Length: 409
Image 1 (cartoon, helix red, strand yellow):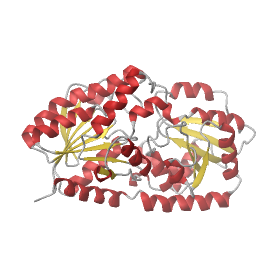
Image 2 (cartoon, rainbow, N blue to C red; image 1 turned 90 degrees about the horizontal axis):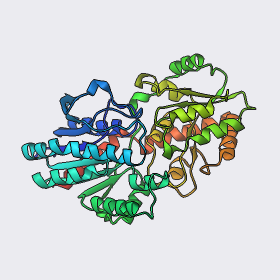
Image 3 (cartoon, rainbow, N blue to C red; image 1 turned 30 degrees about the vertical axis):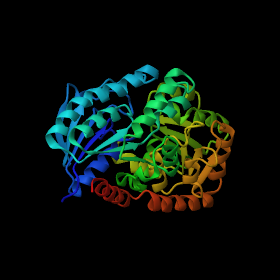
Image 4 (tube, rainbow, N blue to C red; image 1 turned 90 degrees about the vertical axis):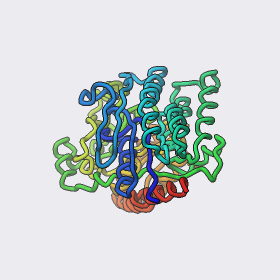
């Protein structure tokens, strides 16, 4: 008996350059190379710009990409993804994915239906597909989206809608034969939602090998952006509510007397315009578009230190995927997170944690590392070792392939 066949359902996929998409694609392509037969029902590219890619216009599109059979579904993409618009975006994918999911379940009889959340509502589609073909159901949680909605103010926990959402989330997760997520703290949260430990599995994200160190490219980028001779504190990634990225503007205000320090933000997202407006009068902060894959290694290498802001209450709801590449770059990380959280545990010994929302503490941490090159080097070396120990792609996916075989046996 060969490796189990899979139907994978997940909204995000490459060519989206950041976020969940590259990890779902990496999982699919690695399993295909191991002999698994994979069909993936995914959305059309839109992230992180929240803008539908015109190259994928039209209805359902089917193609093969690196050995993976892809079905791309049409779905709604709001320009301003807040509240009801974001929910409509997620449910539109779940409904659109239902048509090919039923067809593939009945025709191909996959042994495992693997659903990636967000969007959690697409688990309903996955449950139906698994039932139709008698497959095992694996639910993978990248982000506890209901509680993230509470933390960012999109939904109130004590409201009727909030209580219904929490009940539905727990019920859907309990339908999984396996429920995986990306950190120990998120596994503990699965336990709180009623998932027995024997059905839990840790499936971490990994450092992207395409973003390897590029010193020559880093020097070119510094020269191009006028950063030669400066200590560069870099944030690269999505610009949205749960990042709490506005704290970087506040820290830049406090650092205006330090002309040798520059804060650089590279990213896209729904809050980009408002952020640019707040930073307009500051000479020590730069905003750039998210860099293409070919320049990501140079950009990460260019940084002297990385900034990882997060709002209070979100630290154990999601472990930011960008952290893996920050650590792999061999540079220290300053994160806004409290002691005892998962994010604090991941950077302890290779970076600095400061309280969420405390711009003064963040500015002081930036100064402390800017003025101590020896400490930056030591923390950076520890970061590189941490990435090798915990976020090595081959080891993570080899464990996952073994767990798939256990699940269907």
